[in-house]
Image 1: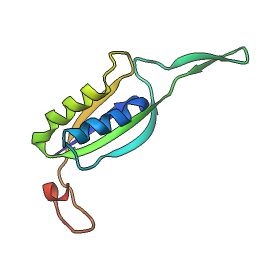
Image 2: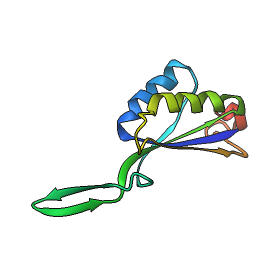
Image 3: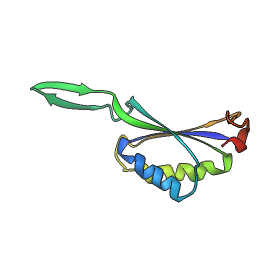
Image 4: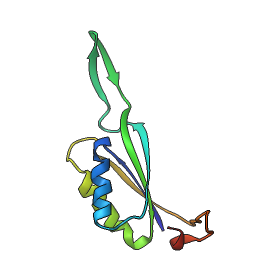
Length: 113
């Protein structure tokens, strides 16, 4: 099993949810609002004549746990649904998961997904 974490633009969440649903690739995901910066480095704006440098940008973090054979398909859909070609599109991280337990039923691993 793998955990896919994707940090994406906030305006791409609905596009991603729809694309994953249409492809039947996930039965669930966790979505978090996060702040961060990378090469984009934030932006500068002027408020009442004063220069304000915003370094932390609002992003969305998506977490999906899946079986190994679905990883490449999910990553492909995430890239296609969220890519704009501009700096700030985000990143995808894939990590191994050792064990999953569904609390309600006690099911484990692939059955718990």
